[in-house]
Length: 372
Image (tube, rainbow, N blue to C red):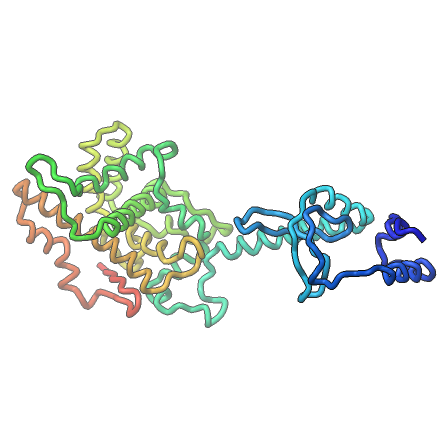
């Protein structure tokens, strides 16, 4: 018997052999002087008949792998070239029914994977199981406010635009929003000293720009969030802009359209104060600022709930900028002979200090809320 005998097409499936052909094949294999598995050299070309596996190089570049042995302790994968031809040959080993079956299996697996990703992308709340409950998220209403939202849409709602191509008006607003707080001295004017590390100041300012972005897309423009159920509430249906906020947004948008940079800087300050001084009744998330804070509760990469400590860090950054804006607005009013700075600050914040009983604070989140 010649060695070429075992490579005939009808012999590609040795488990299908019977009788004399099987006996002849076994005798031929027994005549070979085989190396121990650990001494078998790896190849670089694809071996016809061996299964091709998907893998990655150390630099995460996709590649095709093969191995001579199936036993776990003997498996040694090697990267092969010419995998396309080998894959085609492997497919040719299957009859049309088997090939169609495996193709459909791959399609079904892809659909299941996409369905799993879509399900994981939605905030499901805590109704599925008691172990899923995060008490502080439920207590301050974040779980209810975000339930049913798509997590990628949550993060896209406050993602700051990188250029002015799609949202030129918003881009200009963000450019000027905190531009008055420059750290460099200009003439006799001393630069702003935030008493913060540069990276911390940049991060905190970034939170405020994210908030303005969120408010612009969700509260002012609307239609950002999509739902499968028409009856499902979204942040757009919860947020209620006040008359002062709507007027300030219109003025800011018009100034941005006209490229009136000095006017826009002043309007942005008025808008910021209007958004900060938001009275709300039974629904705290009628406030655009608190609704934005709820969006920060989900991690952008793992899409899981943030730990209370990490969430506190975000809130601290937002609060720092709010305090800065309130102080600046009060100082500007004093400069215009419209009151004392400290008196103005008391006017803006005194109601919160004098009505501590109406404040609700969670033990873990540190998030203060005020009911009117």
